[in-house]
Length: 195
Image (cartoon, rainbow, N blue to C red; front, side, top):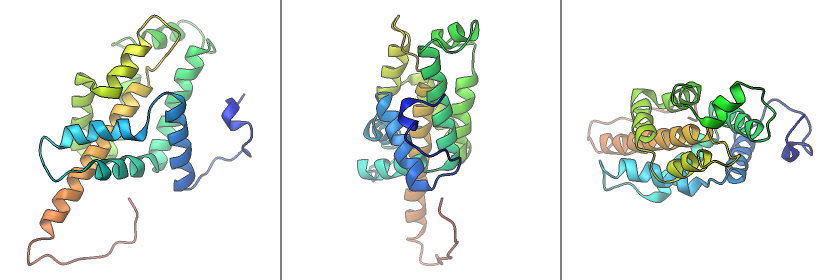
């Protein structure tokens, strides 16, 4: 059975980046999260190291991360697991483990580490910082999932934190690249990829 928002879609398995971005934004919005809230975490994390970072850069980076296929798969699967848990469609004992967001579970952190790892060890380090400190919308999701309601954000809080970590790392990489271009010996090469 597909979620109601998917019923009107023709069954497909492959989507282009614009479609994945749109579906990811829609899924996040349905779960109470905006691109701007994720970008705010990325901005907060990177502005410690550079005053050159703008919110626009962070929003652009979040959107770029949301357009990636691995992000699409991780976000869609994680949000669906959370939703199925809320609706009681996952069997015990795993349903209660998911609903309680037990610290010893750890699979949700693996989703986050994998996503943040798209931007290397710094992405993973940034994710660890966000996972431990739970800033802003990550804290909101974590608390809502543990508030004694049927809400479950076991996967989403880690996925949102990982998107912020990846965006934060991407912004830092762009700033460092721009700094490197100031070197008079810098030569541009063109690669035919869009990451």
